[in-house]
Image (cartoon, rainbow, N blue to C red; front, side, top):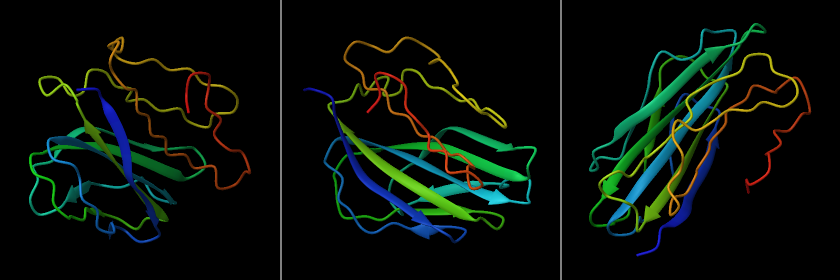
Length: 168
């Protein structure tokens, strides 16, 4: 079976946490959830969590940084395997007051059930202007998919994040 990626949800809130609108994942799928946010004048968040009431979620990694201008950014990645898909919502919670939080839910079917995640990037860059290069922790398999999420505190500029070659 071929590896297929489907973005199920991308939602943003200005509260400390929120519940997505409902969706139904496919049977025998892997859900990958990026949950992150930004806050000004704090030392980032203390903790974040996601839940849906039925799946077992594993936190794959998280990053939490405050820059020299007083903005803090954080991003976590969670996974859960779905045996039988049914209508669900995901609730993301975070401690501390947040200026905005976002959640992205991605579904994979046809994935490698033995090693669903092969490589990752878990890094940051403070007060960055210009280009930035980073690398995966391992070479991707030929039949894999590279999925990336970024959280940035570019509130005081009109700069957009520009993707390098090979990204869409």
